[in-house]
Image 1 (cartoon, rainbow, N blue to C red):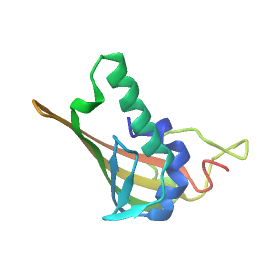
Image 2: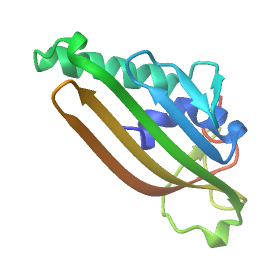
Image 3: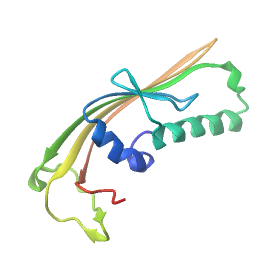
Image 4: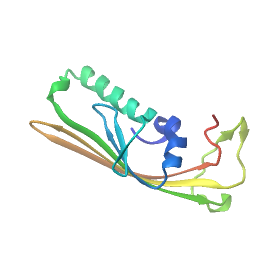
Length: 137
């Protein structure tokens, strides 16, 4: 839920924040980076909205959820084009990118959903790469 296209509109802000740990309270949409509160991120609001939809879809009262958090460890690097490990085809200002520096981001994402009766955890890791200037504003 936190990767790829879901995060696209938060990508420039996350790059600006840099390497570190993002924690999102999916019940409220509030976020902290390296322990400090930050301005709202589009992905945090999307996580909150998705949780609300899933709860409604499955008939689960929100009041039964004690905690719903997503913790994401980011490690950013700039790499030359010839060191990229992915084969994504992306456009910057309508033109395909075929050279130049790339962002590389190693992501480790863990989630926790806790009720009075149970605890659910998830985890995934991914490495993503994209050209400087993407997504274009």
